[in-house]
Amino acid sequence: MFKKILVAADGSDHAKVAVDTAADLAQQSGAELHVVHVPEVQMTAIAVGASAVEVPVNEEETERAAQEVLTAAKAQADEAGAKVTSSELRHGDPALAILDRAKEVGADLLVMGRRGRGPLQGLLLGSVSQKLSAHADSAVLTVK
Ligand code: ATP
Ligand code: MG
Figure 1 (cartoon, rainbow, N blue to C red):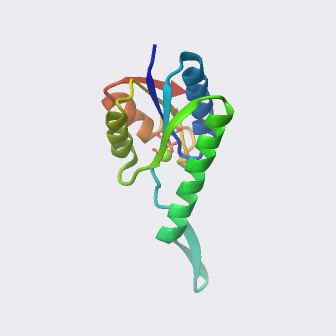
Figure 2 (cartoon, rainbow, N blue to C red; figure 1 turned 30 degrees about the vertical axis):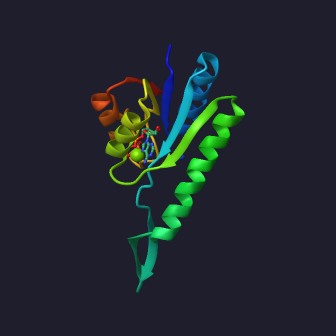
């Protein structure tokens, strides 16, 4: 059975299903559950003359939103009865940062959603999911 499960949370409904699944698995098998979130630069529209342009949301706001995503994911896993051993923010390229964290905790299972917060309709698998499936050292569970 799995002993150390890492779940990647990005605040999307897809990832919420992944957190529930990971928490259930951890709870049933007595595994440690580790939660990781990597803030992604968020854009917002500002008015410039008669039109609008997209600019990055300031760093503080991004960090605050990221902390909220992490806190919510941890609370969700706690509620499902999992033993949440760590919940951490990591920075950089999301897939690489998640893979690094998986190595650090010695995860034997990585759980994630098939899609995330990305805006592209119709994609079956997001780019982070694809990279994690391809490069993880552990087993990977991609939750629909
Ligand atoms: P894309 O980002 O390529 O536009 P997408 O957002 O729909 O597409 P992914 O980003 O691959 O899809 O998200 C799939 C899953 O990967 C999410 O449900 C979540 O489990 C995990 N994930 C994605 N981004 C992050 C992140 N920044 N931090 C933690 N987990 C993430
Ligand atoms: Mg994404």
